[in-house]
Length: 164
Image (tube, rainbow, N blue to C red; front, side, top):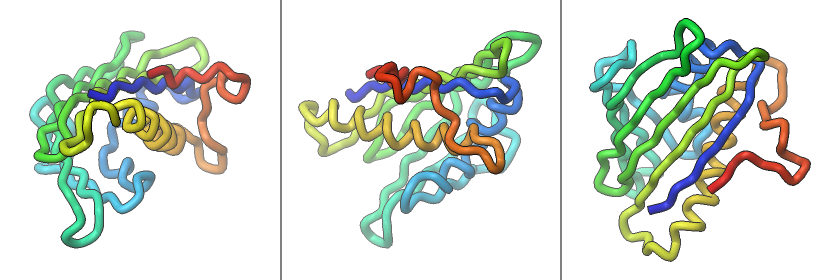
């Protein structure tokens, strides 16, 4: 199983960072050839199921996910969302934590990913691609209008927080 972790710091308050990173349909705008639909619409809660459909025509696959824990940040406490991937191609789970900080928020995304037909020796490549792809998604979701990508302060100086 490929495992990767992405961390970002944002000047956004934790509640706003949470709202953005759990707006499932907005994720699709930053993932090539992907559309996301949420069964039952909003609001998200435990039991919400959404599906990312990636590909073109007959070369597409569905990645259904279910929210199994939903605790938004409130009163200075961190928020946590746990997702279970329940597809026939993509399996695993993801955890998205949003922690309030004195200057905004700290978002931590940890993903455990298994893609059928990808041998275990491909897990490091899958983890690297996941860090790059989902790191870009987080950067875009957390960016303020007219602002560049929301980067971890340690990046660009040899100190990325995208550990794996």
